[in-house]
Length: 249
Image (cartoon, rainbow, N blue to C red; front, side, top):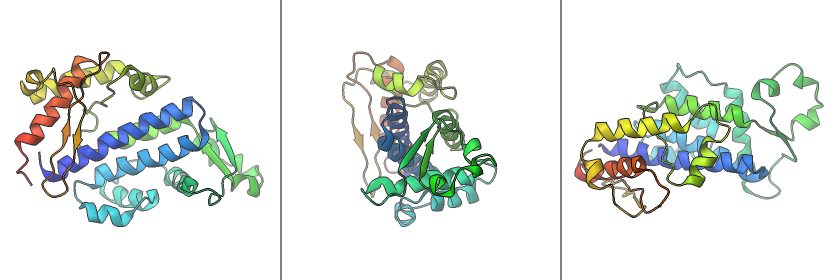
């Protein structure tokens, strides 16, 4: 695995975790946590795609600005059909990072982005619209699905949800990602990556190692009694593939 591929995988792993955290926060009606986790998830999905052709320093220059990241990613994947207004609205959640800095004082749950940008919604008083943070879990699932699928092999890479709790909040009321399809991707990935998966199925630790110069990505998902064999095999396969090719560039 090349250095840029390892960087992409690391960003993707973090993005998937933030996505699960977004879904958990939304299902539990944690207002600020939902908006902040949604922003983090999109930031890392976009950086995952950009990392194949951009250095970490280049990505750092783009910062946490979703609009800047999206503009750059859209230039490279012009066929991806995502409404820039949605990115702009979600990007404004970044101001929630600090108390008193955000203009948002109202939260609207379940309002679709189509409704948010409709002519009917324009009848809402301007002072209300400008302070309204809207979030639709169904729309956010679709946004993540489209963005993740646009990544190289994104349609084939499973999400690593190692515990029953992670799987619960990932797949609950999710019309875009299902456990059955995710399990099939694990099996397919294990088959493609070969016998290395099987040799380390009993690894009992979860660890991630990311070295800045000679990147070595290790993801070994194990040690959970409720974890599926597929998770262990896929995670360890990623580990062995990277360790075995750590000299690649």
